[in-house]
Image (cartoon, rainbow, N blue to C red):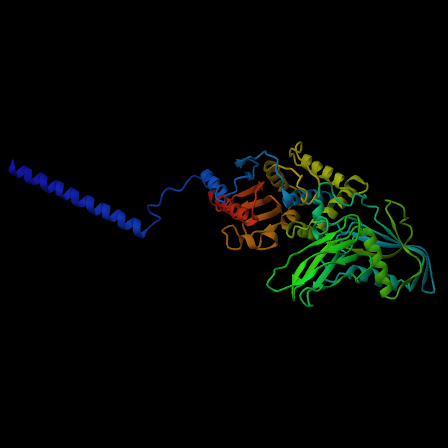
Length: 501
């Protein structure tokens, strides 16, 4: 008995020693190697939920849809809820534009003459016919804002014209006279991102204001503007130069229905500010500026400038005196999706609708054109509610389910390469450059961001860690706060989807 008792005692002592060693090993391992015994990570769905709850955005409404290459939903939250997409709508509009115009389409602005040339004098009227070209500015021409005007004027001179004894008639009949899409907010209408539209547009339908606070505190800053400090617009300068300790307080407002701008900004002494402000009637702005320009180039005009809003009031059998072609649509769409340019989008939207329906281009026909595309792609458009092409109106409504289905079906479109090439690449260019420069999805996501007050959206194509090609749409509505909070969550959601699939 004594022998057996001793044996058992040794056995239990050894067991206890082993337990102590094991516990010690676990403690040491947990201290030096967090990954080995880290708490089990929550499942994919829980991770997404945790991200959405991480920003303190209690009022926010979230919608997420992820589709695979076979158009199957692999993840969704509120997928069929109608959401305000902001500039994510440009993904839809650009697809419809490309479907109608094709990637090689170029705008052509023509100048016709009714009359005859004799001894350097054109006896008769000159017609400048608009095609909707949004590029008659410096945007596409290295900042040379008069580039197109210069090219047209050079052709008039080459034709031998030194003087025009007649009127300059500016025809913008390709577009309707609904200059502003319905649903745009009135307090946006003074600025470059909410300009009126016209088949004849110059300088993105803006005057470029420069303000210099060079005087003493309490005095008015000096102002100048492009083009020409033209008298087509007028400014009421009620601005003040303040002490340098005060920040810049911007206040520019164009009086509705006019080209009078009331300036009430406060600027710190020494501050220089530039702002592009919308003009009231773009066709008249084009006409006034073009006449002044050609006269500055020594082509005299004895008559007046007039505007003509009829679609076919001029005869194309008149003498073609000058013509300018834009860059192709494939290039212009990069401005739409990479730079999120509202003006380019709406001009292209109306242009494509004019071609599609052989009528005056309009926002309403552009919306019909989108629904045509959805029908062609077999995407349900019954609850699609659009007010414009650019997404500036808060009354636009689309679901992330519709958005992702459109994105998947576009992959089979004959112009998909041009469509994909127009999108921002995460961490590389466009509006997605800075947001993903250090992310694991850098160069793995191509798409479009969107923002208006209370709305942040991101949609596009994601190539996952396993090489899968997914369409993803994330839209957040009704949030209060800074958009960077939502951006952080969107980034986390995209990275989680990237790892999962």
